[in-house]
Amino acid sequence: MSEKNIELSIIVPLYNEENNIGALNHRIITVLESMSISFEIIYINDGSKDNTLPLVIELSHRNSSIKFIDLSRNFGHQQSITAGIQYAQGKYLVIMDGDGQDPPELIPELYQKAKSGYEVVYAKRKKRQGEGIMKKFTAKIFYRFLAKITNIQIPVDAGDFRIIHQKVQKILNQMPEQHKYIRGQIAWIGFNQTYIEYDREERMSGETKFTYRKMIGFALDGISGFSTWPLRVATISGFFVSFIAFLLIIYSLYQKYFGTTEKGWTSLHISVLFIGGIQLIGIGILGEYIGRVSENVKNRPHFIIRDSNFDHEQN
Image (cartoon, rainbow, N blue to C red):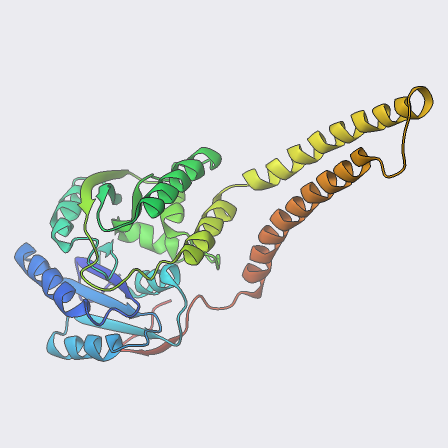
């Protein structure tokens, strides 16, 4: 794919990481130079409000192997990774976060594992340092829940930190969905996949940008993109509620002709509220899926680039 025969591309999305970028870049460069292979580092600035972009541009002036992509606004973590994947020129691509939690020192092990015959090698977390109990618990529950309801094997306890072969990159570039869930897409693609284990480090500095609101949105993208389970639940709930309503009708007729009834009978309110609640849940689930279909039909670009030091266009 590349005229420069680059062996390894490192893709790093950045959002307000001015305090981390210098130290992280030094660690990445040190590791890559010790591997004695051709490489490029692609930093994607996802609409940062601090000095992340000027620092990255300065790094690119010092080292021609450092590339940058400046997005026109904050498009989100997954779209930033998508931009890096689209522009990467290496035979192998490493995806990692820009906060230092994904240790660059693990890149040689990922690379050697990939060279042994795997198209995908993901890093599986044994420990998650610097994260609260609630975040660890919700993440653990979500990944296992998603694994149960999808028809593909999405690895648990693994983020986006991984190495992929160029053939996986080409297929990812052909997948047009707007609401990206890249780790799910890579699992769906298949090929030979394996993992290595590691202890995830704390952020080098600053606070996580992955708020609970973003986590919920990310979870919805994963569930709606790779499972129809919520729709099936809505259907089953509809049949269940219909059955309960049928029993209530029989009971109401029995009370009318053989028992006693009073105005404003409590069961009427209960049944109306119960059925109404189920209907709203079903409509909400349908709305989530229809909204995502609508976004894909619009066929808008996944990201918009304001500036870059790439000297060619990638499709």
